[in-house]
Length: 553
Image (cartoon, rainbow, N blue to C red; front, side, top):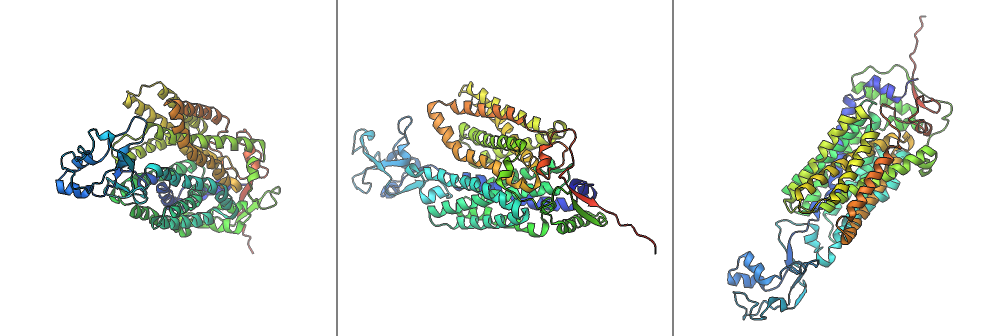
C-alpha cells in the first residue's frame, strides 16, 4: 500500500499548489527576521554626552563649532578600563555664569581641567544622531545600559518558554491553527510595541511576542516540509530558511530609510499580517490529519492538491490504518524520551541547537563592531548566509545530511581554535577566520532544523523541533554573559569554549542516523527503524488507493 509520499508523487511533489503555499509561508519566514535581530536598529546606541543647561547659549554667543563646543565643555576619555566620562559624566560648572570666556572657558576655574569636579548627567543626554531608538527615547545609557540587554533577553526568554508550549499546541490542535493564531498575536504585539509609552510596557510586549513568534516560524517550517514530496523536502526547507536571510537584507534597507524606531517598528510589524493569507492559501497538513484519523479531510485535501497541480483526481481514494494503530496519536513530552533511539536523538539535537546558538552569537560578539557603517555592516554580514545555503543544496544530495552537518561543526570549532593563536594585530586574518567559522555555524543552524524535523514522527514532529530548539534560546540568553565575563579573564578564553563545543558537536552528530531519501517517519516505530536496511511496515500509516471496478449490467 502506498504511503503519503507515494500519493504526493502522483499529485506532484512540488507543483503549483506547493509553490503557492511555499511562497506564502516564505512571507512568514522573512517577517520573523526583524523580531529576531531587529534590536540592532531599534536599540542602537549613538555617541552621547551630558546635557548641560547653559552650554547651548554659551556656544551660540561665542559662535563655536560643534568640535569647539565638545572640546571646551565635554570631559575627555577616562582611564583604561573605565567608563568614558564624556558619555556618562559632566563638569559640575554653572555654564550660565557671565564670567566664562569664549576661549577655553574652564581655564579661569582651574589650572588643570582634570581637577574640576565631575558629576552624573542630571539633565539627561544629547545624542549625536538624526534618528531615534529606544536608547535615546528612554535614556538607556550609562548606569541604565543593562536595560538594552534585558530588552533582548526578554524576547529570547519568550522564545524559550514558547518552545515548550507552542510546539505541543501545533501537534495537538494542528499546524495551521497554531500558525494563524501565533502570527496574528505576534503582529498585534509588534504594533503595540511601536506605541508603548514606557520601558516596562516594552519589556512586556517583547516577552509576549517572543512567546508566539518563534512558534509561528517553526509551524510554517514543519508545514511546508510535510506538504512536499521526498525529492523536494530538503530543498524547500533550506529555501524557507533563506527567506529569513532575505528578511535580514530587507531589514537593513528599511532601517536605513526609516531611522526613527517607532515608525521602523511599525513598518516591520504590519507586513506580518500578510501571513494571515495562509488561511486561504495553505490547508492543514494531511500528514497531521492522518495521524489524528481525520481521513475524510485528508481525502479532500489530496483531491484539492491534485486539482491545483493539474492532475487527475485520484479514483476512489480511501485511507486505511494498520491494525496496530487503533487510536488517535496524541503528543506528549514523554514521547520525546519514550524509546532508546528517541532519547539519544533528543539529547544530541538539544546539544546541537545549544552549540549553534552559542557559537553563532558568540563569534559575532567576540569579533565586535568594526566601527563602519551600521547598515552596510549588517547587510554584508547577512550576505554570508547565502553561500551557506548553496553549500547545503550542493552537498546534501551527494553526501547526505549527517556528514556535512558534522563537518560544518568541526570547521566552526577549528576556526575558533585557530583564532586563539592569531595576533590581534592581524585584523584582516582574524576577520577572515571568523567569517569561515560563521559560515560553518550558519550551515549548522540551517541543517540542524532539517535533521530535527526528519527524526521525529508526525504526531510529535512540531513538538520535537520546538523543544530541542528551545536550547538555542537558552544559549542566546546566556551567551552575552559567557563571552564578556570570560573575556575579562583572558581574551582567548571564550574561543577555547567555542572550540570545545564545536568539535564535540561534530563528533556527536555522527551518532545520528542518515535520513537521505528516507520517508518522513509517521510513528515511533518508524523512528526506531531509521538507519536499518530493511524497515518493517508494522504500525505504518498508509494511504490506500482502491480503484472501483465497473461491472456491466
